Length: 136
Image (cartoon, rainbow, N blue to C red; front, side, top):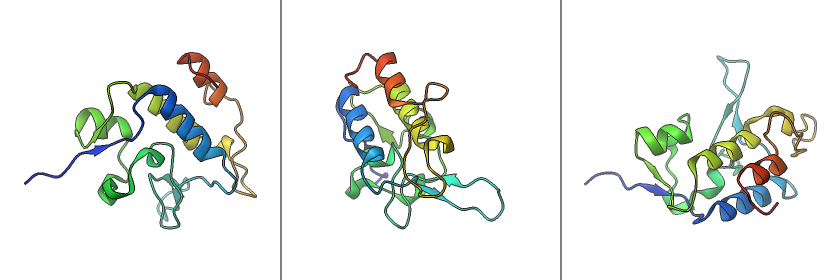
């Protein structure tokens, strides 16, 4: 029997946007990264051992999460490997842009670890809402 596919929870672009925005801006939110001894830059994670989640990781139901997806881009998981499914009303390009908000280190205060959301290079919630015609 083959491995079961992970299905992200949002069914619309607006749901995906709202979920990720609430997740990353909630009090106590931290960037989901793992230090790598062989690299200067940490690796972004769908989930960390201490419970932090990235943008795409926040959309994965607990019962469907698999550690084997770590280190693989959401695009590869959806398009190439067919390990993650999106509902028809959710755009992969939106998920990638939301993931970019999480992954950009400029969006995080390096002393407190909290989300600060610098509006840079289109990786802000306001820019994404405008580009995808969503309610901010």
